[in-house]
Length: 330
Ligand SMILES: [Zn+2]
Image (cartoon, rainbow, N blue to C red; front, side, top):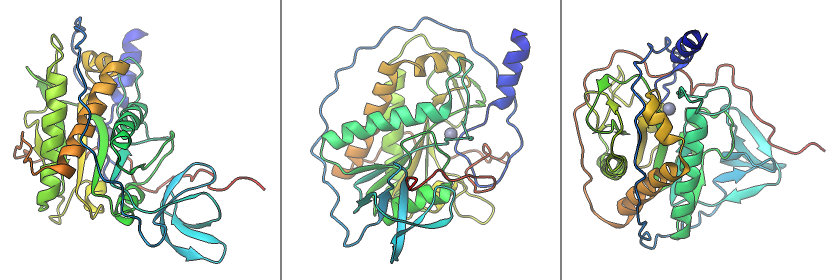
């Protein structure tokens, strides 16, 4: 039974930053051995002061009366015209309008799209949200106006996520993910960061994310890491030459996807289940964003990605998507 359950979990593993089209199931991943990991004590230096958003003349985003974050695309007599999480058009009255953002953080997956799954039961969608919320807290404490693309376990299309960042004029969009299906064992964390093709600011953002997140995880000794052969900061084109990943393709602002660790690797899943480790990763992401906004630091860890023919994990599209309620029942 245990073996059958493990196989089932492995078959459910979906590699990470979802592309728009459905993909075949990811192949089962190898499992590592569990190793005792020393707790790393980190002193968290305060971030530099960050600018709040310069208010836009009209609302560009909305926290609906039910707490769902949506991009605003216009006005109507009855309220604001929004793009729904599933990508439809709707008019919503009430709620809290948003007038710009310094940073948009995008917790990947959600709802019936859980993303990668750890053998310990950790769902990527939940982990992404926890880390993004901790990073948002840090950035807000430094003065930034931070908006999350989702604040609950709800499904959101990649186009709606990207549109929110674009409409809010975010200075940076960071999509928070963790991944699966590595190439094999590694002597260091397999952290990855993807950037928008042909966009130097996005490349610099990804390099800073890579530098901070990889450096943070490397401080945990005794972990049987796994990685892809081309771990690092990189980009991926689709057949037409533009960005493979929908959230980067449509963002229109400096954007990067952070793939923190391999959730499919049990020792890494055990690490990621720890609140102190989630906080350390969030602090790293917050430092990367702060450095992107306040310095000319170049970032590091850039690699040329090897060609990928296999699709990324499924999800991110609108097929079968059911919107959450956007207004309260009357
Ligand atoms: Zn993912």
